[in-house]
Length: 275
Image (cartoon, rainbow, N blue to C red; front, side):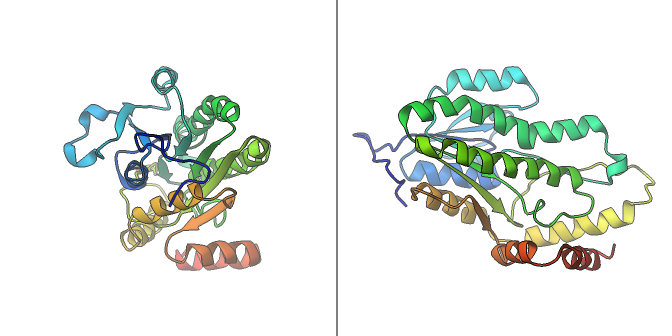
């Protein structure tokens, strides 16, 4: 789909796009879709030198990025001078009881899922505002809509991202900058989820059930290309929706989460996971 208000130049390029976490899964699918549509794409990952040929999308420039290192973020921004589309896709996950999670790990999770996206967004907004156009897309989670036991901190980081994206959307709408949050739900990827459950934990059996249910749903989910299609759809609209869910039954789940009483949502989740 053609990007609204963005025509290709004499060389067929639509503009520049920066996609974080572009070496696999959803990020790779998004980078591939943008490159195929004529965008000049820069993709990030922790160590591009380790990428094998099959991991690289033709036409995509790969640069290193580690949100935990301020110098890494600054180095990326020195090399990427102009960004018309920013896709904040990179992130990490964790599972485990609240009382057993090391606070340092919690901070790292928020760096990956929230503060990293904030830093990049702050860096690209001045240029977008000066040009009177641009798009910032965030990858959210269904966690803030239907919290799942033992993913408290992951859900909290994504809830922060949701609130941030919605407020930002109102701040910059008068400057021609589009902001949208996509919520992929059980997409077939290898998204990492660090288990922070202590050995011998009283929660171990329950955590294992939650993780098994999560992994089962991911394995049965749609391919990452469905998320890339939604990104291209957003870029083709002058005023995309603030919140878009993607995945099997994702729209129904989001609707029920918003309209059912919380006591029912909580009871259904607990029953399914035998909590």
